[in-house]
Length: 77
Image (cartoon, rainbow, N blue to C red; front, side):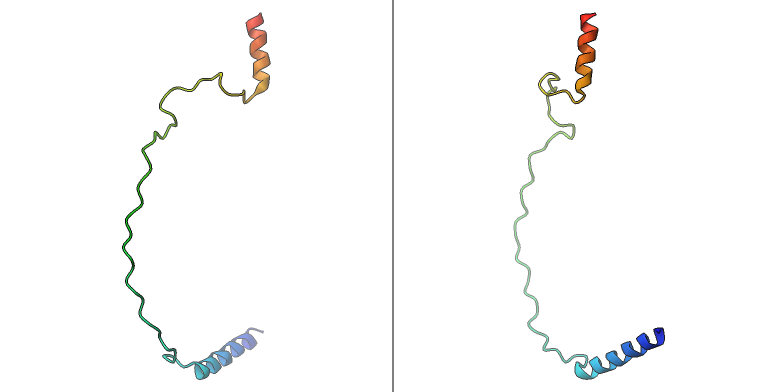
């Protein structure tokens, strides 16, 4: 089976070389010089740790709501 594939590939290559010989393409125009563009401005510097000030823990919802019940029981006791 591989002999058949190799034979067909070689035959196709010979046919393509006859049909489209190397250097037969028109070539086209040479590429133009790239247009110089100014670099985009960088964004303002930010801390990699998020906001500069401390976060308010009571401002957001609890991630684990069952802890809210446990904390209420602790404070009630």
